[in-house]
Length: 447
Ligand code: GAP
Image (tube, rainbow, N blue to C red; front, side, top):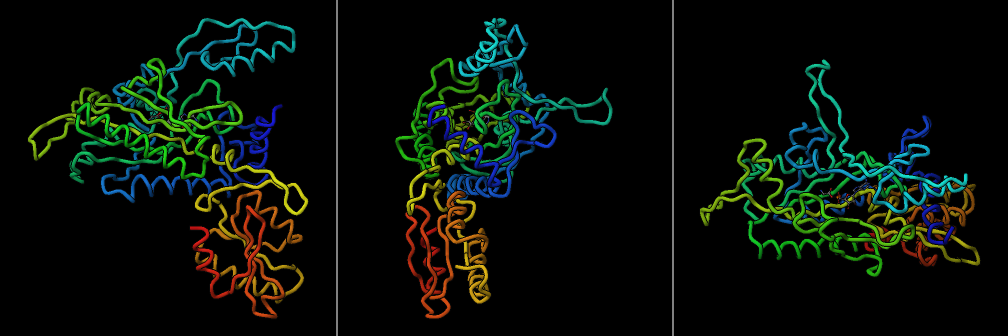
């Protein structure tokens, strides 16, 4: 195993050991491509989503939020083209009948290696197309039940509400609708931990513009850069991210143009993190045709009626989560000892601060530390109190989950009124801060 692949293994192990991620329904054997988020994972994930919501929606004047349902009737997916075209090529191994994606050389290679160990050479069937939508039936009787699909992309829940938003909010074009929510895909080969799952979360913006080539180009360039800058803000080094245009044969059926933000992963090189798609009028035009509801926009100033074009920003929350951890995972030597820590930006850290009494068996230290803990917990929310084990171990535990700062109450706090020590995760350096300045000092550090 190379050092880079090893990093992925370390992340997977850290995620389970420290309560970030668990295999879905693990005690029953688990489900491939399904994961549950534990106490620390859910916080980190929440912080990623919060950052998306802040930058793409609340800080802007031209974007509203949406929260559409997961279940949608088959007609929606017929109109969007997903029933016909949301497919992957599938091949079957003629030895064991396992099915693998034909366009994933890593998956093919991994499977062939299994049989190579038994000295068998794999023969594959011809590729067939396999639809990724996950279906279900709604209704109390088999006969009258309605065929529904769990949304394969969260996008359609926004487009089908275009008219509702127009009629209730009366936005002027250009404007956007942003959303975060679960999507479901029956991936043939879920793999690489959170990278390719069957249930995952997306954060998206559909930005509606005038149907005009020049305007389309301008908005498309703007949103490519906006999404890239947002992704950088998750704490990536610039050289580990890039924008790459899709070749014609890579583009989804709805895309007039498509670019990906890619991350240079340690497990497989450059991989898609986020997509920016020029969807033109594909979705609104098709929903107008299939639902017979007019999805056009009337411009009061020019008196023109048209079906708007859509520029889409679409990112995976779980994929961002995985890439953030891979980027943040760091090993170094501190005080003569090897340590691993997560160099997370404070806004994403699941625990912002930890408070310790220097020793466990001194009631005055504990009392004072608890007092300070209460004050900063009220202020910063996600704060831990820890008096277990020696202080060095407590620092290591917080380093491992990416807590940016640890506050320690010692004898100088009690006896000399010299304030507390604040330790920086990345350098291990401590500085003394007076009790009265502590909250403002920490606010400046972690905001
Ligand atoms: N609405 C457009 C859309 O869904 P996509 O490129 O299929 O486009 C957007 O998906 C993002 O969703 C991807 O860039 C990726 O971050 C995430 N994503 C897609 N499939 C995924 C999967 N199976 N597991 C985890 N994340 C996935």
